[in-house]
Image (cartoon, rainbow, N blue to C red; front, side, top):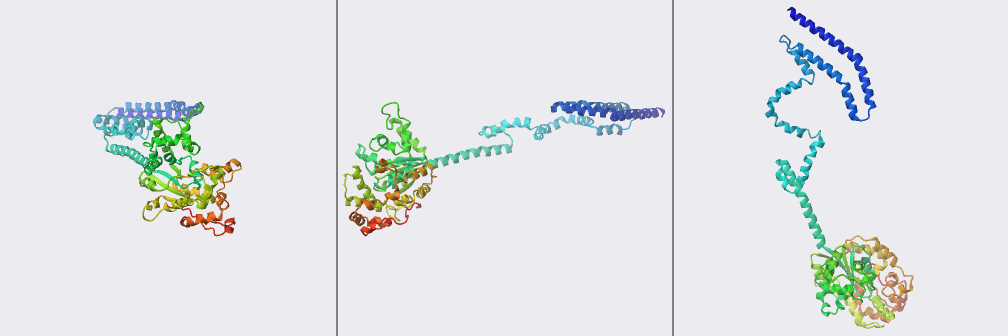
Length: 516
């Protein structure tokens, strides 16, 4: 009993001493150390140094608590001590968790399974090391199927398969869309008669940078040394090849078209001239019109054609729409046919004016109205119209009418309608060209050029009233009554009407550019 009293007394004395020492430390020493530590921390700039200084300043507190804990362990190691004494400090401090972990260590084989799960749970905290490992796996899984078999999880496999299929489907769809867009190439064919303003209208395509413009391709068939080319069969083959940019099989015609002297393709087709310019030798005396090698000409021209958004063809030598019907029925070409017509009185007057320049593309020069020529012109104007049934019923979906007089009165507005028809955005180059070429040129040479494009269309479309006599006008009207009625042109009944400039014989705008 006495021994027990002494041990209790020693314990109380020790507690008192330790408590006093602790009280003095917290009241005197620790505030000075804390102030010094705070001051020291503020002096350092780097975060790593600041953390180290804080740890060193608080090391004394940890050592004091460890000293007290060790002493209590030594004094309470006897069997007479209470069991609750060691438990209180153990639960109060983080140190007693170690004996709990020691107890769980024998369950190592059981805990071995959850331990690999800890890195999975720890992913949110150490993002850099954990994500660094799966990141290459993710990139591997995005690739084709081999990595799908390596992944054992169902969720991973299903996700990988899904992500692998999506790019393939997108690529497949894009490939189909590209193939469809290539097959459905738009081709615009402006068919008209001589001296109907076709050169002027053709320039609205020639000035567009995305147009592959072809000027009078049938001329190459009519003037080729091989006369067998001048037939409806080759008209179809030649126009179809130009429309869908497949030049194989028409190399002979293509070479003649690009290199012949008479037509002057390079002066009228911007896209073709730009292509041929890449092959010319400008250091020689004769650089050549279009010196593309014969063996590669079809491929080179075809690729240049495909690089443009659409094909535009202007021709005055297409008497019938039969070759165009076969092209329209070809599922690979989106064909648009624009029939450009002009008042036959204006057409005949313009042809007669060529005699003054000793120029004519007709068989013979003549300065009088030729009835056969007038009849041929007006028959062409009437027989190539779309019908609800019969041979021309197919034109309903492909045909548009453009009157030269309507275009002359509103060139910008009808130009925009034409590009809406083609489903291609217009270009500023076209607008600029129209603004500079719809006024009479100040140069005498350009004004006298019968094939010039710098003219006032509104003035030009009324010149026939000065150039033709009343007798000539009435002769044309008698032959072309059906054509005049069909296209809404008014008749002249007297000399005074013919000379009256305020009289309008063209009526309102009747161009049918909105026909689908």
